[in-house]
Image 1 (cartoon, rainbow, N blue to C red):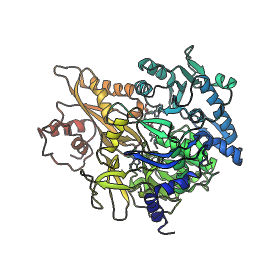
Image 2: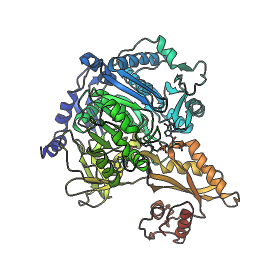
Image 3: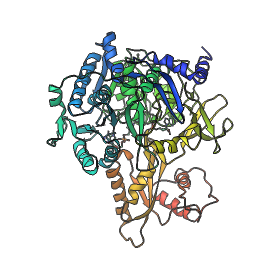
Image 4: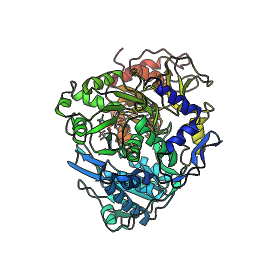
Length: 633
Ligand code: COA
Ligand code: AMP
C-alpha cells in the first residue's frame, strides 16, 4: 500500500503522544502512566511517567499466562561445545525466577546494579532477565574486553554483585574468564559483595571463599522470586559504549519506553508475528544482543536463538544456514562483517544449497555500513529481501530502517532507507542549518527522541548533555555524518569522532591512544582506522619514541600491540603499529588523523592548508607502506 509508511511516519512526528500511547497498549502495566511524554525539562525527556511495569513479566510471565507456556522461548545452539538446549516460556520463566531468588539472596534488590560478564550461554539471558525481575539494573560487559575495561565498568556502575562464568570458548582457545574477573576486581576500587559463577566443563575455576557462589549450587536451593514493579522511568540496564576517551559512556535504558518501543519494532520493522523464530546472530555484550537476542523477541512472544559460535570455522561457512534450517528461523539479523566472512570462504554460496531455508523470509543487517557488494551477494544467494538499518547503542533500536512491517520501500544501495517512525533525522551544518539534499552534514535527530532511546548517561548527566545535546541545540547528535537524498533516504558515511567500527564492534581510537601513550618509550602517538575488506575497519597505531630510545622498533611495536590486547582486550583487533619520527599536525597542534587515514586507504587527499610541515606526510606514507598500507603510491 503505497504511502502508508509516509503517513505513519508523519503521524509519529505530529502526534507523538497519541502514537506511542497506542503502542504502549501492547505492554502490560501494573500502573498506567500519567503522562505519555514529560517534556518539562528539555533536553531531558521522559516517557510514560507515573507508569509502573515489570519488563521481565512482559518478556516471560505474560506469555505463560496467555497460553505460550509450552512454546520454545530460547534455543541455545553451541557448535563450540557441541551442545544444544531448549527452554519453553514456562521453563525460562521458572529458571529466571529462581535466579532472581539467587541474586536476592546475595543482597541484590531494586535499583542495585549487577554486572554480567559472560559468554554466549543462556545463563547470560537468565541473569539479565532476573535483574529485570527484581528491578535491579544489569550491565553486561562483552567477554572480549580485558580485566582493565571490566574494572573501569565496575567502578562506574558500582555493582552489588557480578555474574560470570569460568570460561568462554573462542574457536581454537578457551578464554578463562575467572582470572580476568578476579584481576578486574583487584584493580577496581569498588568491590562487589558477591560473584555468582557458572562453572563450564571446558575449564572449571576456583571460587573465592566468602565472595563467590557456584551458580548450580545456588540454583538448587533458591526460592523463585516474583516480579517487582518499577517506574517506567527506572533504569533497566546500563550498557557501556566507546566514546572519544578511555572512559566509556554508560548508556542508560529505561523500563517503560524500552518495552513499548522494542515490542513495536518487532511487527513494524521486522514484520515478525508472535510464535515465529527470530535470530540475532550477535553477542549479548552488544546493544544488538540486548535488544534483539534478549528483550524484543521475548516481549513479542517469539523464539530467540543464543548461538555460541561464529559465521565461519564452527565448523564451516554453512553454520548460519544450518541454524536457519534446523530451527525454522523466519528472520535473521546480523552484521555485514559476518556475511563478508562467509563470502570469503564460500564465494559462490555453495553451502546454502545444502540446507532447507524454506521458512527464512528476511535478512536484516546493521552495526556498520552495508557495502553494496555484500548486499548484492546476500540478495542473490539467499533470494530474500536484505534490509539495512542504522542504529546505535544510544538509541537501542533503528534510527533509520526500511520498515517492512509497515510498507516495504524501494532499496537504495548504501542507504539504511528512511528515518524510522518517531525519528526526525536531518543533515545539518556547523550552524545547525539543514544542508541541501545530497550534501554531507552531521546527522542529527530532532528532540524528543522516541521511547527506548537513552534518557541519560549513568552518573554523567553533564557528559550526556555535552556529548549529545549541546552542539546542535534541540537535536540529538548521532556522531555520524552523511547525507539525505531528495527522496528522504539517509546515507550514513562516517563517524565525526574518534570512534571506529571493527567487525561491527564500536571502538575508541582515543582509548587505544591512551594505552599506547602509557608505554615508557612512547612520546606521542596516534591511532587511526584503516579500511579492511573483512572487518570494515582495523585500528593502526603510529608511535613517536622518546629521545634517546635505542631499543628495537619491532620490539616496541610488538609491546604496544600486546599492551592494547591486555588493557582493552582482543576485541580491539589492534595488531599493527609503526614507529615514525614525527606526527603530521596543524599549526595549532592538532594531529591530522584524517589525512593519514586517506593516505593509508589510497583515497584522494590534499596537503591540508593548515599543516605545520608537509614533508612529514612523505614519512607517514613510507611508514604505512612498511606495514602494508598506502600501496597505491
Ligand atoms: N570473548 C573473548 N574473546 C573474544 C570474544 C569473546 N566473547 N569475541 C571475540 N573475541 C576475540 C577473538 O577470539 C579474536 O581474538 P584473536 O585476536 O586472538 O583472534 C578477537 O577478539 C577479535 O574477534 P572478532 O572481531 O570476532 O574477529 P575474529 O577474527 O575472531 O572473527 C568474524 C571475525 C567476522 C567471524 C567475527 O568478527 C564475526 O562473527 N563478526 C560478526 C559481527 C558481529 O557479531 N557483530 C556484533 C554487532 S551486530
Ligand atoms: P554501536 O553503538 O556499537 O551499535 O555502533 C553504532 C555505530 O555503528 C553508528 O553510530 C554507526 O557509525 C555504525 N552503524 C550502525 N549501523 C549502521 C548502518 N546500518 N550503516 C552505517 N553505519 C552503521
